[in-house]
Length: 155
Image 1: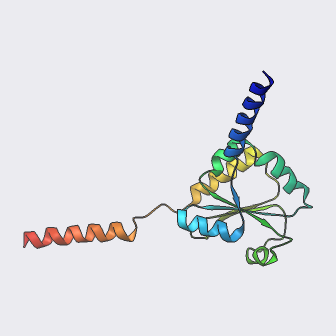
Image 2: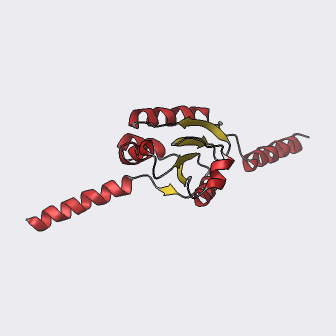
């Protein structure tokens, strides 16, 4: 009986861990965002920052936040180790959350603590500011070729 309880506990903990947000370092995350054409959530934090710790423990594990973040590449930047990136984005306060489109252009930012409800709202608002997808070069090429063929056979 104890073995069955242990197996169930292991299964549940594995499922919860699998549902957690995958965080990247800056370089790997930007590469992933570009290759997957996904927008980015950059979190600038410091280990000594109490609001940062509170978000780590209470906001990011929330299932609603995990669900909303699934469409983004999540990147954590430790400002004590990556002053270059902190300077690049002009970060002065922690935590700061910066939302980028898939090309790395800033869409919005929030400075300070966000609880789960506020984080979900920030993500939804930033999603609304993302550029609408336009047809890629390949789609335009195919349409142009089709029009040329139509004109050729009509002449």
